[in-house]
Image (tube, rainbow, N blue to C red):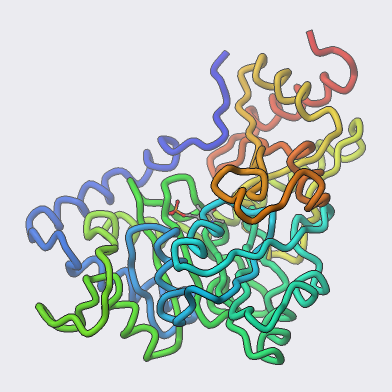
Length: 372
Ligand SMILES: *Cc1c(COP(=O)(O)O)cnc(C)c1O
């Protein structure tokens, strides 16, 4: 039996392959590899899609976060709050900016920090909050923005997993002062390599970011600030332009798969299924369930040729890279509980009903004790 992948990038490429080939050929014909026409067009199109005035294409989601912090003049001596339960890149970017990452524990039922938890972590050195729309679910950015405004802080959204998630007409990335995206291949909008973008409606920051990603140079061979080389590749931008046109349809398909999982898995064993908020507010980058028997369930699925994943098995505060924060096992009980119980099921727009049935039957068999 064919195995079922966690993400199937070939299935996504197949129906759009000819459009992609044509887009790549156009770049090769033009030869404008660095900051070429496709970059500018994609920046405009993606910013407009998000409802922001500017898009600045960069080399990765990690760089989008780092350069956002630098544009906001956040660095040594400053503290930046972020959820303890996120991909490590969020914390790495804060560290790379020279600021101190301050982790905020999460509520296991939402996977997100409770609003009160953010406020408790604020000190006189805090400069910014980085909400992460984890797994594709919009964080409570409206409340956070109110809190940040009251305390004179910036909200920098980590929207790397939430392209196109929306609430009340607003789209992920446009709630905060700066919105950061990754186009890593497996994200809801992914390219054929690494890529990222910052969206903002602040004209000054947009100009600063354009210089920062290009050797600190607003004008060739003039470097008023010390920038870096972190540009979105023209070839990647040309691919992303094609894929952006499919993003909403893909996100709707993901939501549909999530609904199928929800129906088939309700009431089985000790499973806790993800909360499903109002339509559009969760774009299901990942479909993450919880079980106290997670490890056994994971190996059962893997024996059946079903790839499931754990996002993330080792919390940031228990990683060697952040040992200097001085936190240990027990420091963030919500996050540690999730690391023990979470399981990401196969989730991609092309997941078909036969594959879905195999995954859900296999899970049911496990809890019925028919795991042989
Ligand atoms: C993927 C991801 C990043 C980093 O993006 P890269 O493009 O891989 O650098 C940052 N934050 C979150 C939440 C992510 O999922």
